[in-house]
Length: 181
Image 1 (tube, helix red, strand yellow):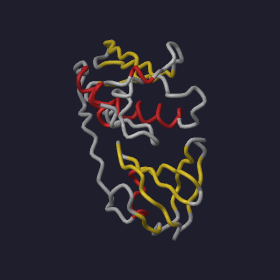
Image 2 (cartoon, helix red, strand yellow):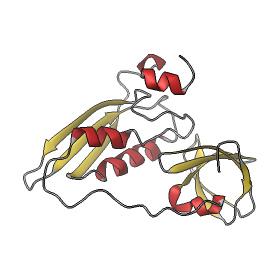
Image 3 (tube, one colour):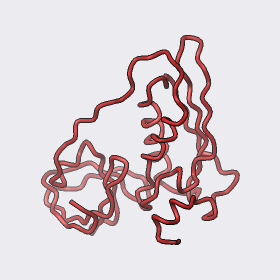
Image 4 (cartoon, helix red, strand yellow):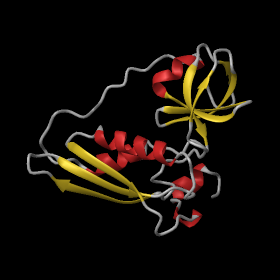
């Protein structure tokens, strides 16, 4: 299934309304159009508006379920910062086909050693708009991705509003993805 493809849901499926961020149940046989599949979730459009469907429920779209294998091996070694950044690049705003790093939403990442070994990852990020109802969903997605990195034993993802996000914070790669360059 590719963006623009239409299908009927094969079963009732839990989803998240976009941009409100509220949970909803989409009934079986609801007609949907896939708008994007990025970072392990799918954004669909229909008479209900936009909604996000998690990877674990993608069978409702007629897609095969993917066995998610965590790469987080038991280790007391410190986490690798590049791997954490790479995982953050797997987090997407469900309305924008650019990851949160290239959108310029991640302001900082700090890895702190823990006394028992491993690392605590502290991420400060923002959203494209302060009232975005998807904020908690994006925040939880970022934390989950960071926690999957070997060596990360604890993670905090804090939403901050200063400085305010502007389009000038989008990376060159992000602008290319959006067709701006």
